[in-house]
Length: 183
Image (cartoon, rainbow, N blue to C red; front, side):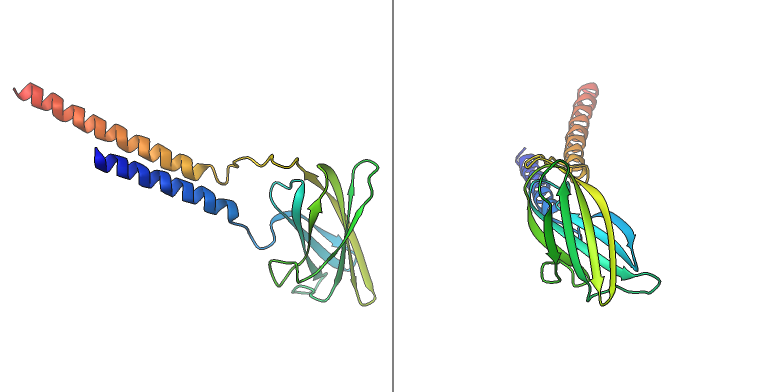
């Protein structure tokens, strides 16, 4: 019985570690929000966290020159976030310093309210200018729940533990029945 409780403690510890580590795992730029043509450029917008909530946020942008391979690294990128309603827009300047990847430019800031926001990306490079926009939904702070990208791991561990316990109980009962019928 002591080994069962040790095995249970190990499984619970592993499940907790997976959940804790999975929360911090992120891709370079975050969740892809849109990829659009913007004049002579192609703009790709990523955001973190996912889901996007009130508070700290990262808007990362990758810029490509239409018809040419590779990313444009020397573009000047401005993000204009406008909430639905009559609130003032937020104007941000994306930089390489704020990005999680050297290929992206990012703006890190605090989103003041939930709702649907229009994000306009303006790209300037030399005498070329491009602009595109899209909508993002911002949830209320604290609404982040266990998502289906994290939840299956601890559930699988729990199901495995239940299966192992039932299997051991079945084997034990079968031995007892065989021993009783042999007498």
